[in-house]
Length: 363
Image (cartoon, rainbow, N blue to C red):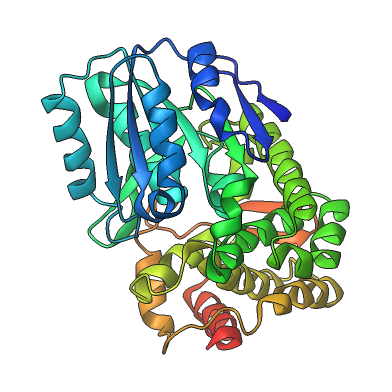
């Protein structure tokens, strides 16, 4: 089992990575949490494939437990789902000595984390991610929240988990779309981190897409090592942490315009393409590097399909992005591998042109 520490000044925590380690969950809860009762928030698909194992773990905990199982779609990443969790917690008389345990992908972690951040002004929680995207990205860093009014993650809070337990054996039941989704976020890391990670990602893409365990484990470890270092230096996203948003201003708007018919990681790939084109249009990115980045993007061709995308609608959704300042859309753009520019503004025409070129790749 690999252990990576997220060394925050106030709320440090470990990330455990391994195969077939979820049976150690209760042991880790007892070690890292003060809670005397547990409330599990579980993705219904995970429960379908791994329900017997999860039930066994819940029953083995010596004290009070409860659970909420839900279909973790973007539509259900909502106040209505949160309300169900709050009702179960209140009706079950769960107190501040409760830990909320998220078992699922990014949506499950975000919803459970926000419930933990707000119930009784904050209770402990634990992340047990079960998708590649959650493994390499969303389970670490403490971002929680939900969608409202058609706007992604517009309501949220920073609330760090007590620990993260990544069991790569969960990935064996993922379909290709979920793997592509995770690899979309991995593409981001291959651009913003190091040349070594970029080389590994490009060379091992087919193995990663086939779910080859050793390649997957290395990708998760490298991504978490990088993200934890970024979060340690900027927990609340006031500066450096913004590099993790490469492509996301476009991506969130593309998701909304597509009515969530594509997954977040797939939208991230399309958003990164738009960011590449905008970076080149502003003279930030040279043509040689642009070609190199687009070659990496081409690995996803045939795996991502946008349905009649509309650039003007995408732009309008971008105007509600939570990263905007004084009504101005702010972009994270790329100059080179590991060289990212923050809070960049661009004229509407350049942005629209970049959207049109980007969505054409996957239309």
